Amino acid sequence: MSSTLPPRRLGILAAMHDELAGLLAQMGPDAVVHRIGLRDYHVGELYGQACVLVLARIGKVAAAATTVTLIREFGVDRIVFTGLAGGIGPGVRVGDVVVGQTLVQHDMDARPLFARHEVPLLGRASFETDAALNARLRASALAYVAEEMSTDIDAATRADFGIDVPVVHDGLIASGDTFVHAAGMASSLLDALPEVLCVEMEGAAVAQICHEYAVPCAVLRTVSDRADSTASVDFRAFLERVASVYAVGILRRFLQGA
Ligand code: SAH
Image 1 (cartoon, rainbow, N blue to C red):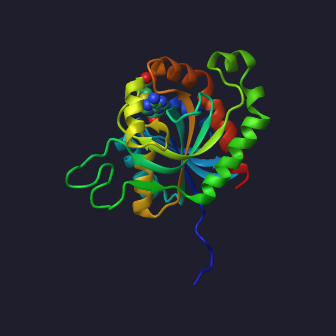
Image 2 (cartoon, rainbow, N blue to C red):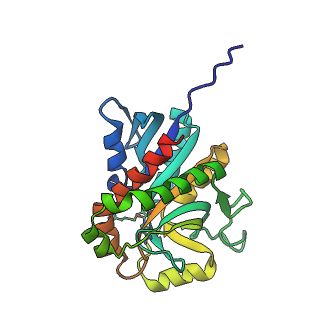
């Protein structure tokens, strides 16, 4: 029997073009593109690592479908989601980074048949990400914000977004098919899930699929807004001016350290 191990391949997903554009540019023209179900899967090397990059589109269904395709069609053995999020935990500010240790679907509610947030028939409400991937992402994010962020993003842009010294958090992320854009929405979410650091629309779907297929995964989020009445303006500006820079800065270190 051959002792050769199959090649390792990392799947990287994002919800929006600006979150992925910088990484796609780094992959270069040699990447082979496969189009499946309205998505382009870019197969190639990124900083020396075999990767598949894909724009998943927005929301839990889109993220789940894309994650299954990454696992079944492309045989990825680890998955990282990168994107933006609204900070709702105290002290989670625009420009901070959140590494999701646990993910929950805040809009899952099959009461009275199942407990609030529990995913029916899976017997659980929350999904853990992979400790080793998280440790490497956290180290990469800390190094990026300490050493590189202030040269990548000029002082005027940092001032516009109020980014001073970004904090790297790890903990609970809540996902749901809602753009949270009012203080009242954020506070009722916090009432139900007091530990939540930030809110987004895909991570828990990726984590659920990775749990079902026993594939290690991680969710990396940069905080673009505070999920309040200025969220949509802050989010769009951050997406255009900052999102891709952070994703490349952190994931380059992550991949080079692999
Ligand atoms: N295309 C639309 C909607 C983007 S939805 C637009 O440009 O306005 C927001 C995306 O960023 C989702 O992929 C979600 O995961 C993340 N996100 C950032 N801030 C969020 C917030 N306050 N609430 C929910 N998701 C948020």
